[in-house]
Length: 256
Ligand code: PGA
Image 1 (cartoon, rainbow, N blue to C red):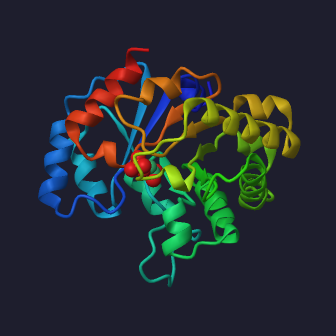
Image 2 (cartoon, protein in one colour; image 1 turned 180 degrees about the vertical axis):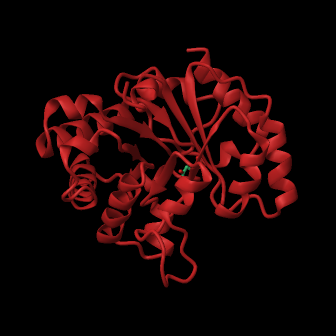
């Protein structure tokens, strides 16, 4: 059985800690509190800052690990970079690539994101590609922006590898705003993403690929997304930094 098949039908919960918490002590506290997570029907991936990954692995909780970014080369003279091989070697399974904050604050281009996705795949890391529009003026804008991102970010990635990728629909206006995209609109956006993948590859691949949602997901709304057809998981940020809130979020997903 392909290693991916085991997970394919479980809902994904990818916790993006971003640049938090501020100290190792606090990170340890959070890891310890999360030991109480009960995970059976979902796949939970914690993405702490690089510097806490090692410490997290020592705790051996019921989760998997992912990173929030990686470089596209495995080693070399790239000051400050962390490579996909380093992450794989540490035991990470996932890596978030192209988050809007990386695009905005670190000037990541679609070309860089494309290289990173290819490098992650080469190292058997599952890339979680983030796409999303800045505002929501009209439906056309979403199609145009997300469509272009998908075309550029996935350029030259063969159909044989594409179903390993997770695509996160992350409308920028919904991130950290407390104003999530409605489940219905999210479902429409994920339908668009699948139709775009069907055009770029084929329908079979589009049906198989995992598409998730991120942007102000909390314990009280997680179920409304996961109930929708075609939404395969969520990517909470702030809600994953509070142990009680995150345990509730996972519980509500598990109970579906
Ligand atoms: P948020 O972040 O849940 O705090 O809105 C989500 C994200 O940026 O991935």
